[in-house]
Amino acid sequence: YKLYWLVKTKEELNKAGANIPTAWLLVIPFANFEKRDLVSMFFLTIITFGIYKLYWLVKTKEELNKAGADIPTAWLLVIPFANFYFLWRWAEAFAEKVKKDNNSVIYFVILIFLPFISMLILQNYINNKK
Image (tube, rainbow, N blue to C red; front, top):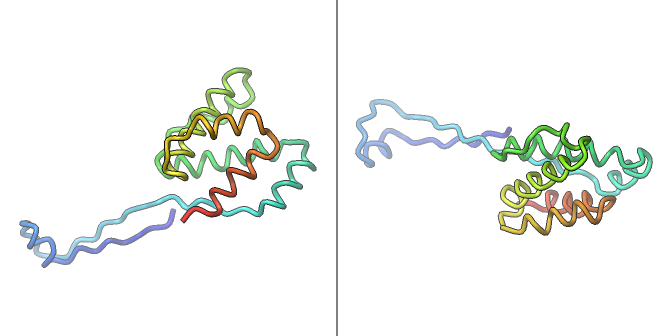
């Protein structure tokens, strides 16, 4: 987590109707999404026969959960049919926390039908996130 510090001085709080004798400090955390090199990701996926994609899903799940998402355990990825539930929840979180839109169905379809390049497409969105 990176922390942004929002400082409210005594005067600002008192203007809002509070009677605070000292300044207050409020800490607001936000998730820091890791930028990854797409070329390295591509070659790691080939070299590991796709295992790197599972690693990437787990790491990005952790980042999304730090941002406030509620993606279940990554162990669901190795259970038939439960992996679809995991990917759906991941796509919902990605749409909400990274893209800030309602296109979770599109991201889910990308994850299912473009298995080897889906992480490159989605990581590119993460890398370009402002």
